[in-house]
Structures are given as C-alpha cells and as structure tokens.
Length: 154
Image (cartoon, rainbow, N blue to C red; front, side, top):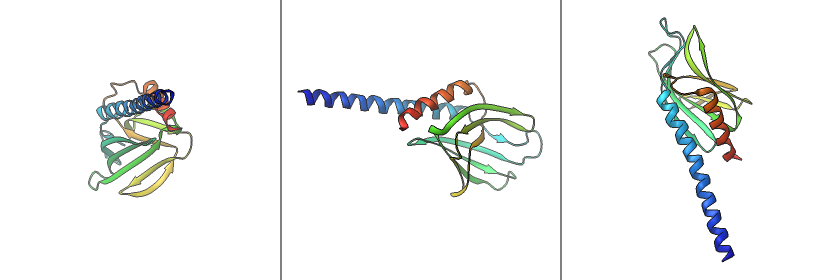
C-alpha cells in the first residue's frame, strides 16, 4: 500500500511538473507569435536588413526562433536562432531612430547560436529580432516567465 501511494504521488508530481512547463512554453510561444512583425534596419528609407515570418518553439530548454532574412529585400535566407533559456538575463524593448523597435534578449554567456540556411554563423551574448504590436508587457513579464521556465531545466 505504501509503495502504491508513493507511485501515485510521483505520477501526479510528474504530470503537474510537465503541464506547468508546457503551459509556460505554450504561453510564451503564443504571445511572441501574436506580437511578432517585420524588423527593418532602416524604416522609411533604404532597407539594409529585414527579418519577417517569425516562428517560435521550444526544444528542451532552448527557445528556437526561425525567420526569413534579407540584406537587400530580394534574396531571402532562412535564419534560426537558438537561445538557452537558463542563460537569459535581460528581456526588453529597444527603440531608436535608425531601426524599427525590436526585442532584445541578452544572455549571461556566449551561448546564443545563429544559423543561416543550416550553417552555424556565430555564438553571441545577445540577439535582436523584430516585433510588431507591443500590446504585452515585455520587460517584466517575459523575464519572469523565462526564469520560471528555467527552473525546469536543472
């Protein structure tokens, strides 16, 4: 009987743990997707860089962002960025005159991997990608969500 109770308790803890992680991941993906737009390096002038058609997913403890990227608006490449959520330090919106507003995610180490058409480009400690609407509170909400999610990655 004692072993049976331990097995049931373990099962419920495991199911609750898995649901919480999945719920956080789904919430983040859904919100990022609903707010993503097109990022341009020079709005209202010549386009030097443009990124669009973002998709977001999780694989274990990595946030995976895919998009289409162009340096001239004619030739398009498939971009993929992999960010370990356990390394995320800062999540905020950056605005300036030379580029459209963008989401900034910084990590604590050089752990972000960037791929272009399947080839590894570099490792970096921060990444920028465009968003559209900003109907969500990025700064506090996403940093705390990534911190909660990273507790499942130990």
